[in-house]
Length: 130
Image (cartoon, rainbow, N blue to C red):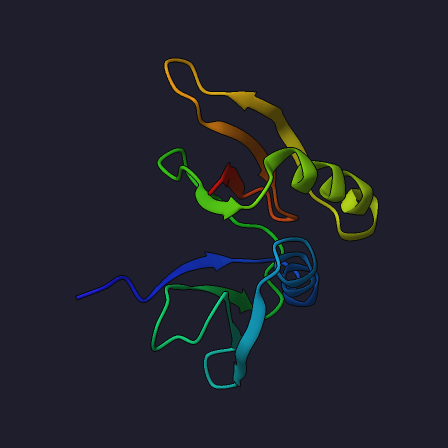
């Protein structure tokens, strides 16, 4: 068994695809419209779906607002260098939207350097060094 994907509902599919490919370095693996259900799915990841867990972006046609609730936490992404990632992200914020929530910091009682950002839909992403 393995986790196949995590799904996020998005209000602007192309903006979210651009964010996850240009900022997070993911590759668009596939995208398909479902006219009878009035939604589009896009799958992005760091490798093929057969080998890795991917991100599913769901766009419900015409829907521009969602209630995420307070149980959702965040996605965690490993990067080679947290500080460098955040500096590159800072340069792209205006172009692709998003937000730096927490600048790079060392987690208490740990040597883990981390930061937090938000995507265009407000989903939180934890950035960690590998």
